[in-house]
Length: 187
Length: 152
Image 1 (tube, each protein chain N blue to C red):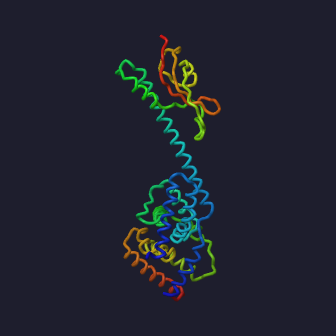
Image 2: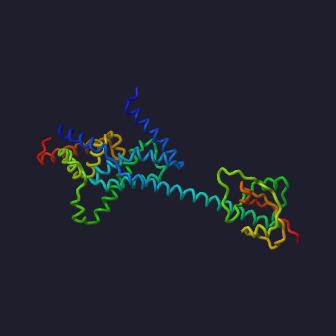
Image 3: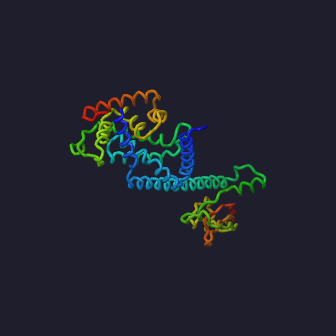
């Protein structure tokens, strides 16, 4: 018996493969379907990593423009399309970090708050705490805890061993618990 | 850790609704259209260039008959069929589903020169035998040169 989640994943991969074949042949509707299926996941990952909607939108655009120019990069044997796109987003984010380190942000940029609901103070505190984590911990939290990716998928995206993902996630959760406790939020 | 899990669950649920703004979709699709247009144009130009190059090679070969060894007529006939059609300059090529006719005719070389072809013959009175693709509107679209017979 194949677990239901696994069957769903296989179905998604087949669907992605079919859409990609049509997209490579120049089918605009197929590309639109790919975009609409995967843009939210890429956007959420980029937003968790940057803590900024504008930057997340720019990274999402970069990822799909990259896909347009590299239609042959998807290999179903190496994982799903979602993993590939998030992996590409990760590379764009890395490039962005290294570029941003060359510049000193203006005070307005530093203080600019992201538009978010203030209805859940715990979630908002947690969001701030995640944004303050080192990148290697932040990405496993974004992938496993927020996006619901398996350790195996996260390891393929981050390009490390599954055990490394586990230990990073464990360490990240301990850091988050400590940060939230320090802000008067018992966890 | 339960409160951390709860907060993480609420944050994930809150984020689940979010996605990139619609403007990003429009920008990405505009890029897709731009790339597709460029690819089509590139393939058309490459096709036309290949046709032009092969025709040039054939014409050069045709103008040096003395150096060529004599070939049996059957081989000549086969080579004749394989020659590509050359689009007539400044005339739109036939559409992908347009019905066309191929008409074999004799015409003065001067007429081909007037249509924009570069002919490598000094004799303007020479007669050319050619297959001509005629579109549904009756206009000639492309020419396949079969032979040139000089009067001199």
